[in-house]
Image 1 (tube, rainbow, N blue to C red):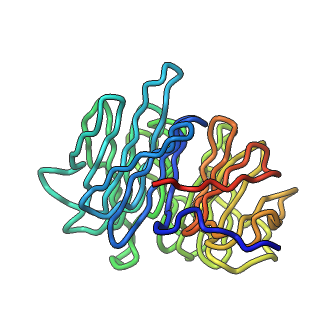
Image 2 (cartoon, one colour):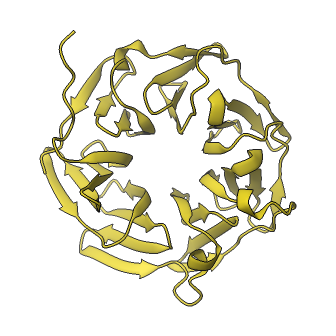
Length: 297
């Protein structure tokens, strides 16, 4: 087997977001500097904030209008659109994240944008205005409180997951904690139009459920931590930092085509799926054949 090349000679990668197959965003790090990267068709561009990037999300409309939102650990924001970039803060008045804990994830969900983090903290942007909609934790273990990830279908169907097996559902007005049957840290959540919700986390934890509760998916393959989920070509994919897996007939199987590549974050949209690892970016159109993407900046 030929030696696998890194997707960049000088940069490490974290996350990706797909506006369309012709506009993809990545977050990267180079010599303690964090980068927002855009791959538009075959051309790369870069923007460098003066703070740590923890997450990004984006979308592109059919008319070519787009929005990409980059989140910093203390609530800093960069919003990119066809006219350029705008810097802001989701809690500029109170700076709550600096006092309560870092933020971890941001996601465009329907017509709103949701950011989550330690505390737990949840912020929602609606009609260009950010609001703090954080739930109240039931336990006193403050060090273990917090959300690592968020997903949903629309404003009244939001799911946040995090430490101590926490799974919370938001109906547009109030939060409700759902029994997860685990105390493992949960790192990613994926909501499907069918109503099914998939969650993954530490020590090989994979859960499937809904608003009524969750149960584990059989995993005899790995005890590594899972960090990301994606739905692509009617299959569920889940990723560790070194391997990609797919759920077939309720059981976990290794995607052998990615053996030897770093993985970690998955994103599927517009008939493509991206796998982003510390050293490698890979793209597939069918879940079978994979193409490595090389960063040219």
